[in-house]
Amino acid sequence: MFELTKSFTFDAGHTLEHHQGLCSKPHGHTYRLMITLNSPTLNEEGSSKNMVMDFYDIGQIVKPMLKDFFDHQWINETLETDSPTVEFMAKWIYDHLKPQIPLLTKVTLYETQTSWASYFEH
Image 1: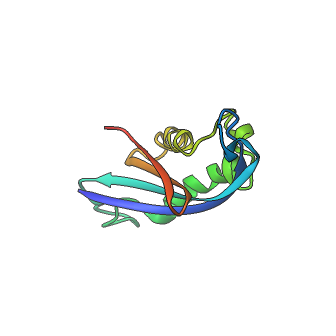
Image 2 (image 1 turned 120 degrees about the horizontal axis):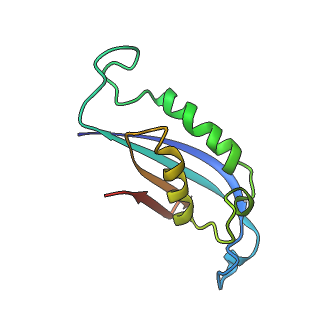
């Protein structure tokens, strides 16, 4: 089995309205997004021969989503939720990308260098 991961970074702000701590106040993060694909085989022909998927092609799918919903955005508004936790965002990203990237198996989103969440289906 092959596993392929591409990472992206973006800056965004949010509040967690129901949180009992500091996160209930407006704040922002520099997020790190990891998109992971799995495949039992490699492409056998074409420009992506011997690849699971071209990193460039992954970027062509992910970057517009980041621009429209995440990068320098107020996530509460773009995702239409009052509590855009890192867990919520990871699943939202997975659900948004899966139809476009069928080999997608996991989304990991780092809120800080020491705190992150992953979403994957069994």
